[in-house]
Image (cartoon, rainbow, N blue to C red):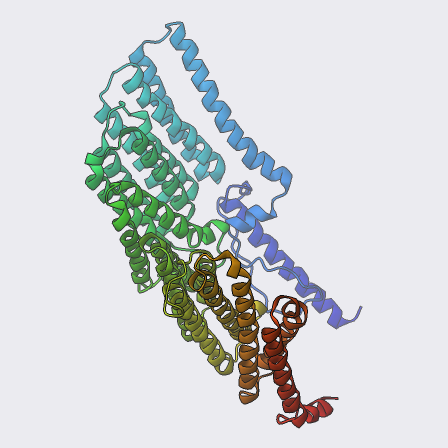
Length: 610
């Protein structure tokens, strides 16, 4: 072994020693590893050696946190330190409850003594837990605090509900004090788990002191204070799980109250409280503090799932508060109000650590606004206006997506256009007495104009954009081509409807002997229109030098050929049959002549490609 290899191995040993020391310090900080007996404080950090290229790539432990410490523990360690710990808490609470029940049943202790024993036991467990926290056993300390807090809550509940030793306000104030104490301890010890215990106890307090009466103002005011406290905590600490706990508990308590006590005479007051709850959890994702290094799944859910759930539940809650007589005209404006709120929310900046995830949150708020606008259209309009509204919205969103270069807006625009297209084919006004100038043809004209606008926007965007787009179905050239195909299909469908309506509903007056003639007239009209439209499309393809348009024209002409030779030859009269074949023949000869002249030099292009 030469001197260079020896020095490299020594460097690796020093690096490994440093990483092991950092790992042990992180484990002691989280109560997983006991501190050494011979020293009261951790040893100072060894000097950091100069980095050298190691022979083997090693993971970096330069910054150990709780998530990393948990990841390094084996399944056996997690079972012993976490799972058994939680089961132990449950077993302790059950054991204490059964012991107290046994003592109560045998009249060993009077009501006042029973309550005092519970209160003293809970306080003693909380005080005892601090000794373990100072020694570094944080998780075990939090477990004792959970048992002690649960004992205090149960003792206060028994004093109020079972023995009537204290009144409801006194029990309520005492439980709030327990919750506030847990919140204070979580703050000074920087422990999210203690904050979760405090939130759980705070949300359970209204259930423990409930008298079965309708206390809407007291209940909702208390929940607002609790939610505001949670909002402050998540704005100052990276504790995003508190948001889900507070949001879930608030929703469940509000739902339970509404199912039991709500009536129409409380609508105004209830709407005010609903608005406060909605605003708190709408602003929370923009105020939540995320860790600077790596966001946990809870952090990601706080800025993605929570805004969508809050928006959906908020709209449902306000919609149910509307009076039945006013819901028809008020529901669309409610959806518009929600859309306007989320558009205004886009103007608010994200704070601190959330700025990295701000584009995602802004995109979600924009998507929510678009969804509410899309909902408002069918709530306000019906029939053709529903179709027109969705199509115009889709075209406007596509223009905005091109300007902002937003894939999310592009997807939402496509969804609106699809909804409008489906509604165009399903929800249609009946045929009118006036051909062409009627509601159905006008609706199709708006649809054709909307897709023409989309085709124009996509075509311009495909020429001006140099971005690499991995999603092939949503690329600008693909959208432009799909829009052109849709335009041609809508023209054929609209013209087909008008031909059908003219010959079946307008010309025929109930004479069944003339039905065959009207069918013959309609079929001849179909063939003539297909030929003329195919010729026009082919001419446009030559003028624009677009193979895409020319291929569509050739397909349409092939369909016309099949129809004439298969259907028209048997169904049409001799005169119409002669006209169909003469027209088709003249058209095909003209097309053949154009291709033989090779005005676009197609043969030269093919020879150059080969």
